[in-house]
Length: 319
Image (cartoon, rainbow, N blue to C red):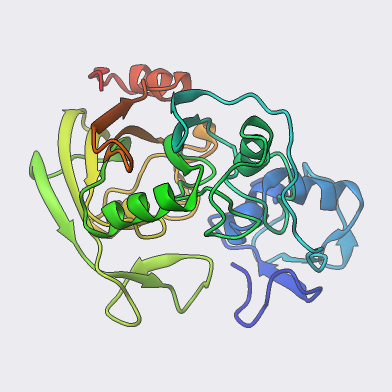
């Protein structure tokens, strides 16, 4: 875990003391788990340039530090961020003059940030839409009404103009925008249906993490339904009333059933082969800002998800 007081991205050193749980793992995985804001490719570039040190010595990307080893490196100060158009293929499930719904692949970052300067969904949208996107969220997040995590796959709403953006944002605020997810979680839930109503705020121990807390938090409500289960894993459907950062991941970990593969909120001996959480945004339902028509868009489970269901012996219940 990165030491308290470190401010990522202003050329201050990051210091990580390797825990017993992390000992023997590849150093790039340990760093990404400790500093989730950094992408693995960015960390590997630091390692490639001999900019990461363990106990004072530069190490390669496949190095596996022992317990209590001290990892140190510097994250370069962020350059002035800008989003430029890039010809990156998009899986568009709905589009008109006001908005579009994109099926985001797992591993794609939504907008540029330190460590992820290009190759993001925003870069692709700027190219596809010829720059015609809502400007409410500024030049780094044009058109972005809501976000999903880098390693969460599935549907994302994008506004092409401010009128559509305001309408869709209001629907989120009023809880009239339907968002349905599928996930595989550890263990078996006591009830086949349930509601998690627990406020979420930023962790005081690690500012990159969220947690259930009464301090400086906002209400968060998640509905779940069990679709199939084994002794080790459950396949569930989730519906969000609110859209807090990492909401599903935090809520499931809070009740003792973290999302399989979650490198941040899951167990240290979790499903590393997944390379990220097994979580898919499979349905969006909203009222069209101009026509007033109710539109529902669905996305089938991606290959990584169905392969893991099969591996776990869980039935693939279609969305």
